[in-house]
Image (cartoon, rainbow, N blue to C red; front, side, top):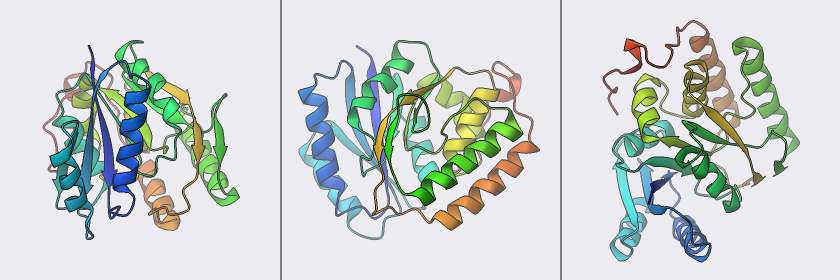
Length: 250
């Protein structure tokens, strides 16, 4: 049976972590999820009790693990968790579980059974259902418009916190992702799509979390700088000698 590692990157989420893990585990058990699974909490430099909460849960539950990074950055946490995983595929979801968990099986199946290298939850493709503010809707659509114009991309949503990747693709692509924070997702998807990897958009149901840790203004500026950097970058095709490099310092 195929193995899936489900990574939850966290920063100062002690107040919701236990409830989210309980809800996710209950869903996986009640739906008889068809793959062997493990939940992995990736704590990146939390300053509250997140790490101790995660460690306590891990001591009680054999199917929950913890990885800790002393430096902040969602991308940094995902890079470490995914590269150290021995599962056939890895995915991640935000701790707020804004994405309906019914999207997890088609996301995992795309990589584990359908031959895709990367699968990404999309809030802006046919079949998706979303609830969010006009401000965030406008910002997201504007960002995707820039990606389509400057990269001739078919991607419909790069920033949704709901993605899966095969172990082989992770080891090919992650060493070439330079960003360690919020642009990590977009850079990964662009490297995959333009590098000749198979990427699938999975429509999801998604509800905005009003308790988000995302600084919209800061994230927008980071994203724009990232797009400008990638416009000047040669993206190797799959199989090129340059596609495998020594992973950067985590």
